[in-house]
Amino acid sequence: MPRASRAESERTRARIVDVARTAFTAHGYQGVGLERIARDAGVTRGAVYHHFADKEALFAAVLDGVQASVAERIVAATADVSDPRRSLEIGSRAFLEACLADANRRILLVDAVAVLGWDVWREHDARHGGRTLTHVLGQLADADRLRGLDPAAAAVLLSGAMNEAAVWAATAGGDLEAAWAVLERLIDAVAE
Image (cartoon, rainbow, N blue to C red; front, side, top):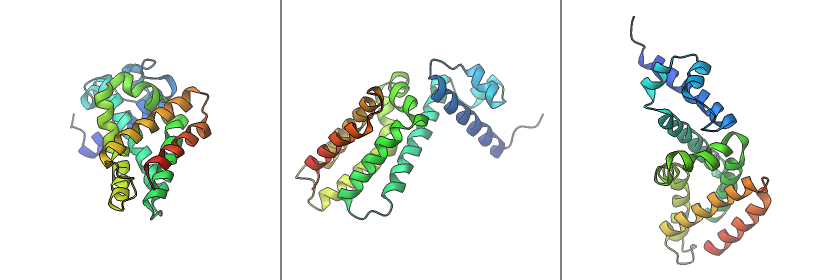
């Protein structure tokens, strides 16, 4: 039997990740087995293991896609904004809304840290939304609008505040506006 072409292999991998994302969103990491993902993707378990060492590796790929889509949402929301202060506000709001979206909430706010651990989760976070936040804070610092704060420290601490705001809003019945009101004040305290 001929080996699958590279393009076919990439399509199979993408289908597995897409099916896994749907399953993890609906049932959580613990509620889904690789057998089910393979069946729903129309592939064998062997095909899943060909692309992913284990369920955790598959989840990491799903998380990477979710975080990439959140980062894309932030970039799209801020694309036409020239003022870095306003970009910080709009991007932060877009982040919060994206985290609370039904398609992202469980993966980002419930399972990610529990499954992958803090260090791996931080790597994923830094690779996507963290870069955007660091960039805009760097712009503010360059314009002397970061109140003399270190942009790297501000990025880590604002990121933590935004992540916790999303978790709080998700566990407080989705109270986006209450979480946003606090984040807005934090942004006011950090950036001019």
